[in-house]
Image (tube, rainbow, N blue to C red; front, side):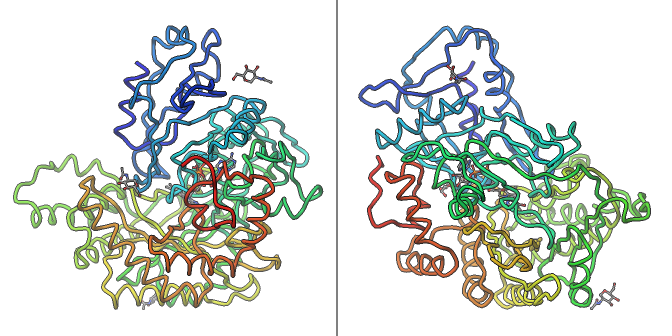
Length: 590
Ligand SMILES: Cc1cc2nc3c(=O)[nH]c(=O)nc-3n(C[C@H](O)[C@H](O)[C@H](O)COP(=O)(O)OP(=O)(O)OC[C@H]3O[C@@H](n4cnc5c(N)ncnc54)[C@H](O)[C@@H]3O)c2cc1C
Ligand SMILES: *[C@@H]1O[C@H](CO)[C@@H](O)[C@H](O)[C@H]1NC(C)=O
Ligand SMILES: *[C@@H]1O[C@H](CO)[C@@H](O)[C@H](O)[C@H]1NC(C)=O
Ligand SMILES: CC(=O)N[C@H]1CO[C@H](CO)[C@@H](O)[C@@H]1O
């Protein structure tokens, strides 16, 4: 049973998943091949959670679809086995990024159940120079948490340890996922200040890359960290906080998994609150007129720009009391809103396929993002086709204007659509009092570039804002608390499993990204999100990227502290080594 599900999973895309295995591998010729099954008697809580963690993430983010695997009936029987050698290749763990754009296979996937286990695993790996890169839910589009030579994952260390209702602070084990943390906080009347588009990240993962939501007064999520327990290879377990060691604290908050395994995190929370989301369609000139006011007035605001159209979808979210009770009833029903997109799909099917194998009923079942994926799949790199799809998307949003009320964690999610390539940059946009308007200039240039270069750019170009972060490695880092930053994401979907087509889309995406890089990044001091930065294959380009990173981030300090805390680079991976090479070469196995 167990085995079968492992095979099933391997053929799909999935999150790094809890699996029945190894800690303290017994020293044999190749310890990496040793798989240990837990030997404790009846089905423990942790065991249950292992299987509850068997999720396959299919599509979507705000409305992600999950398939959970049933708890194996013979699990008890399985537990009778204490140690077992894993035959190849059945126990290889394939860990893939969400979009299936990066994946690794590994035999070392440690899942400690508690702090002492984790400490032992880190100590052991350090002594034996074996790599165990910390990985969270593995959701980073660039696979920054993945390492072929081995990983440690805290999915079983997912407890809420303390809630301080007065101070509105919570102390958690870093393996807890955002969704579960928010659920646990409910009964205390608390929640997180802000959210990314999805809630499946582990706290360790979301903090270490400096992830963000939107709202020009709200900093990225790492800024909510008050203290952390860091398990380091060379210095053991250390507690880092502003009081104890400010330099290390601000470096390690957004530490890219390279300074230690974050075992525990104390987070600042806020009162649980409801938000009113107002979605409406605007255009570039109206936005220019109102931008300054909107940024300041709205707690959360984002713009979804639709290439080749003048349509901009504006989404504002604000606390409930500020508003008169909004009209709940949308002007159009779901079918009316989708009509244009469905019609385009039916007509496109006629053009692209001689036989229509999809019935009307099937089409009526599809959500907007599913329809968009199917439409794009027909001719993903044909600019004229993409323009039609974008225009249909603009129509869809025009008929989807209206209000939605709900708890902040529900409202702030977003359905990002299917598998995709994404590049997101962060750049300064002045202050809240005095916005530089560079954010709007950036988009204007980007849209012009798309049109001039005839890039088959789908929608949306998502634009968000945050306040600054004091974390030194954050793309929004600034010592000036008033500074605000804009985050802009470009996208190309991968609506196909055909490897040739995926390759073509990938190439087109990288040329699109390259054009934005050449035209915009230096001009606007824009830097890529750590979960989205891609390492160039070309050596000269890589050297240029390193140079660039040194201008913005304290790379020397980061490497110096890595040398102190993780001298053998057991927590690192190829991506980190490429971006932040150290003088002494990593000597860990492979
Ligand atoms: C559909 C989708 C939507 C997204 N939307 C947003 C968004 O709106 N805003 C945004 O900012 N990001 C967004 N992201 C990116 C996502 O929030 C980040 O990639 C986040 O890091 C993922 O968390 P994770 O647990 O999967 O971390 P992973 O990808 O597994 O790891 C991320 C980093 O954290 C490190 N790490 C993980 N756990 C630990 C630990 N315990 N100790 C030390 N280091 C650790 C890893 O080494 C790695 O460097 C989105 C991603 C997807 C797929
Ligand atoms: C940690 O978990 C292991 C099982 O992996 C168990 O044997 C050990 O007793 C636990 N330690 C503590 C302190 O709970
Ligand atoms: C932009 O939107 C405003 C407000 O809806 C409208 O008055 C204006 O005509 C629009 N401008 C363009 C160029 O479409
Ligand atoms: C399933 C899938 O598409 N996997 C991809 C993961 O990433 C690697 C490297 O980036 C690709 O080569 C794979 O095709």
